[in-house]
Length: 169
Image (cartoon, rainbow, N blue to C red; front, side):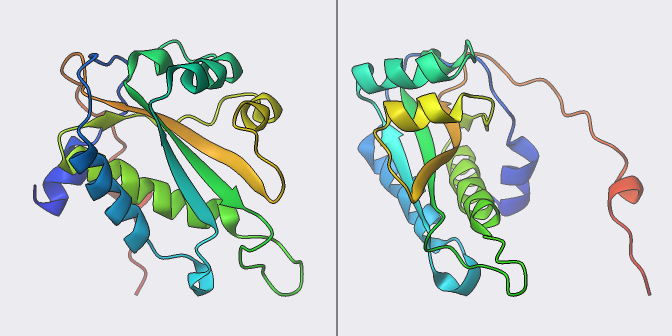
């Protein structure tokens, strides 16, 4: 799929079929994640592709999104706050930006492969980290169902480009 087709077709999908996802597709998505840039190339992330029913149930306990259990895979984006680049002066970690770039690579790769996703950050972080048995410096910064859409996505509703992008000469 052409890049502009991918970004035009990507939607947040909230209903999934139970069709399984081939390992070949997960490997392509993993490759896309490995190519994502991070500050100073520190790569303070890990993406989990969870099929295990027991672990998926524990994740769903920490996340109230009703559509999450429908997808055959739940992606979890982990950030390593200790090893992420920090801005000089205020020591602010940039891990969320790194993870945002990486996870969007994952989401766009999934779209290119005919799969659907939906970024989810609305969950109980402590319960999520406990469900995944994570310890510092790791934390679950985002999750997404991954699967085949159960139905066609609705058309996008977007602001006009001149409201969101300005060229200043």
